[in-house]
Length: 111
Image 1: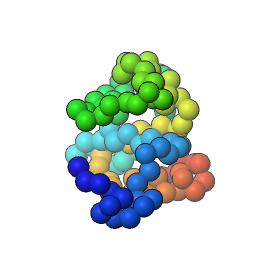
Image 2: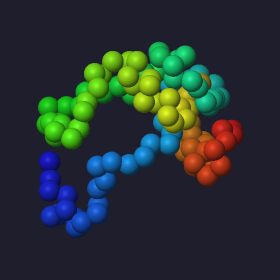
Image 3: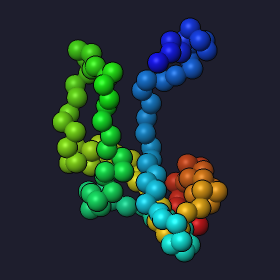
């Protein structure tokens, strides 16, 4: 842990930001061509463990922060507010980055 503002100056770290999309890498070596598709996370709850993480030992919510239970249905509810892209097939970081950038620019999933 480091005091970011002291070390790097103000406005170097955002504690809150909107989330417009989530890319889930569900690919494997030697699985052929990479595929990507927009998914409904409520129908693909099998993908949630890739995103669900513990808040960690040092996170203590303040009085203004209400924390929902870390249940899959709560994650699915929050993620229903943004696009969820599943990358499957073979591993291709360059192509995945290109797809993500294009998605952020146009909102379209293109290979």
